[in-house]
Image (cartoon, rainbow, N blue to C red; front, side, top):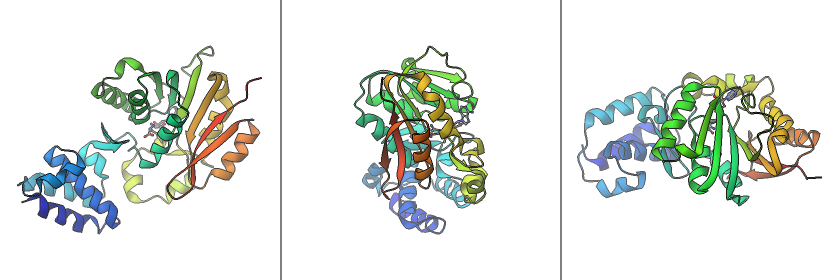
Amino acid sequence: MKVSSALRHAQEILSKIEDEDYAKWEALLILAYILKVAPLQVYLYLDKEISEEKFFKILKERQNKKPLPYILKEVYFWGRKFHIEEGVLIPRQDTEILIQAFLDLNIKKGRILELGIGSGIISITLLLERPEIQAFGIDINFKALKLSRKNALEYKVEKRLSLIKGNWFNPIGERCKFKVIISNPPYLSEKEWKDLEKEVKFFEPKEALIAGEKGTEYQEMLLKKSHDYLENNGFLIFEMGYNQSEEIQGLLKKYNWKYKFHRDLRNYKRVVVAWKESI
Ligand SMILES: C[S@@+](CC[C@H](N)C(=O)[O-])C[C@H]1O[C@@H](n2cnc3c(N)ncnc32)[C@H](O)[C@@H]1O
């Protein structure tokens, strides 16, 4: 089968389970995986023959609603390819807003702490974009830490990334201070979890997505505790749901933070950068 017909066929099949633009993108990702090239390079190989067996196996798994990154065991984030596997949350494109928020601060040196590091995409991207920073990543999920290490080795930043298993701030000594604390914490409520599509609910780790009854429990914990672990003039940066801005704003005020929101392409507030004025 030629790449051109495989692309067309994949788009047609995938558009039955997702919207057309996304089907086009996933078709491209499948062919990029088979050809072992970057997604946009697929168009250079339209006449090449590919193995039908591999192609149809991937399509079948996808039709059964398994998320494509778990099938291919790879995912793109901030233009780079990362390893991903079941049991660890699939990085979302919205999380790139966290990266932009950090880069906008123009911090070139110092230590950063990531809480809930997952596959490592945030810390590793920041280490690659800012070659003089040092990162510390905590997660309660050992599989996530193993995957972060694999990704760090792939990008040769393992010496600048310390990985620690633990419950949020627990492994950090009181005298340890960071220039930035960054997190994409679980922020769904129990109810939102119940309403999620099968693709997420059946395949992705629940504890990476749910915070509790309200959804804002972990963000509140970050606002309550982070200041103790920040250097003077340090920043707390975290992601939030499109529908959480009012509640988060209330919490920012309750815990006396100054703040700035960053929005997604649909204009929802999705990331907050918070700091305290030094006395
Ligand atoms: C929304 S995921 C974010 C993963 C990754 N940073 C990303 O953006 O793709 C939240 C992460 O927090 C971790 N987590 C959940 N509860 C935790 C806890 N009590 N202490 C530390 N990490 C926790 C989960 O295992 C998961 O990897």
